[in-house]
Image (cartoon, rainbow, N blue to C red; front, side, top):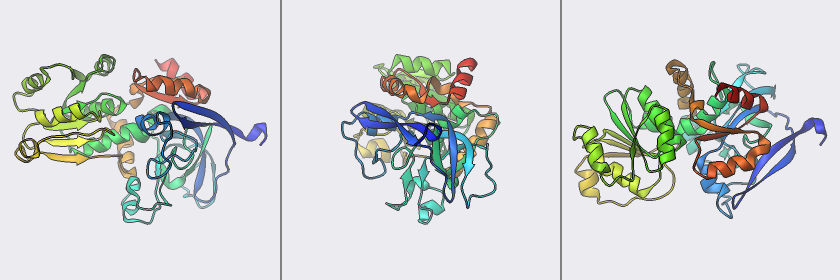
Length: 363
């Protein structure tokens, strides 16, 4: 490697450790493009499954194989390999859909790469193949989503997983202006779900125990409720005219929050579990069957849903970088992860110098 073809990349080591390593800038092969990275978000699943565990697992969908981390990449095409569709040009701004599927199984053919059935063909950026915490990233052209103006690269990074995950949950719940929605857990995904549900016409309340997160949500125009209040069920009941919310989206992964959501939901409500981890125990007959609740699990949006999200954000004039509180360079990755792990931030982004400067000047 020479100085001209070296890039930096962040590798997570487990046990709250990471390393910044040098790599040769890759050359795109057939069906691939090289992106200059502009923004790459940190995600709660990075903390839960890779950064915090002493020995992160290496197999399965959340198996981490020591690659460059970061599964929320957004950048600019700087080189194009052979056999790439002519729709893609150098300088195009793109979001990378973070799951590369085999392309042959039934789920991939439906655009649901997240559910790809191939153990060898399914590769997630930042998990099984190099991700976005770097100066450059090699991406398969089939995984690209065009970043429309006036969305920023940081907007695109938030879309790449966190907001895409929130969007999939709102679609699963079929939210409309007829709904009253309760979001439990106001981390980045919960905040995103609340903002999207508002744009979809619903009345929205956010349930959160952490005062810092409630304040951050209020700053975004979200009505919040203290999840630690002993009278929280009575408060929700009163706010909803005695009926309860018609939609509950749990973004917390916490047993108590999940149970509260089920208990306060009105009859025939739709419940979506999107927050990872944890468990919940309840008596099925009175809480679910007799209330005729519909319970859905929702993981990540499809690539077509991500394209739809980009279009809607432009239409709604909703810019998700509003969720971002801290931006760092690749060299600041250790501080970025440590701060994000504290739980006292909004969305945290690793960005290029140009994008970090633009974001800072916009504040």
